[in-house]
Amino acid sequence: MFDSTVLADAFFHAFYSNTWRLDDSSVDGLSVLESYQIQNLVCEKRIQLGERVVGYKVGCTSHAIRSQFGISEPISGRLFAPHVQGEGMPIDRRAYANCAIEPEMVFTMGCDLFGSDFSDQELIEAIGHVSPGIELHNYRFWHQPPSLQELICSGGIHAGLIVGNRKMSADALNFKHEAFSVYQDKKLITSAPASEIMGGPLESLRWLVNSLSSSGEGLKSGSMVIPGSPTELIAINHDSEIQVVIENLGQVSAIFHS
Image 1 (cartoon, rainbow, N blue to C red):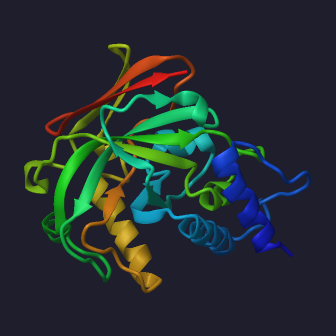
Image 2 (tube, helix red, strand yellow):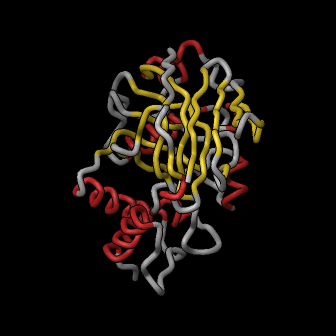
């Protein structure tokens, strides 16, 4: 039988120290429900430390990411302040456990959503605005092979979010055909269309609202949501400039240094 407190303490400690302090533990035997219970306990501990939940992420939404992790279904996690920031601040890649990034659309919700199976138009109308973003990751699994359980416990190995200055109405976007492109030092690294995100980012948002509503939470106005990336994670293993360009939405960039 798993000890939720011990595991939650370990994941909490790992986020801030980039080390794993349990000598003999495995998350493989956890159920999905138990894994989310661990994530919730870690969330409570971070709030007690003074952090604040400002939204949600949906992970493992594309074939590229699922293949990379060997995982077959999406997961959700939280976004925390002060780990959400605007563009322009340099990023110390050494502060992360194997720093990696993903290109993201960032939804800022304009109204509450509670219920299931909202139409595309209802979701679009609920989004206050959309910005380009760069999700930061601690791309390290403490147990091998990577598992859905560890991914959930860690909140999707999420470490932070950079939000671009551009704010666009959701009505101006197609949410299927926009190309996501990532450049490193002006060289194209990867590119994929929005449709790779579960058929489109609105599908991901719908999944999140369904999931939150089924647990009695719902999605609150003002919350940020990153619905997932159509590309694989990109490791930042040397000092460089990363630029994310999303067709019809704009771009966001960050300087990574050591």
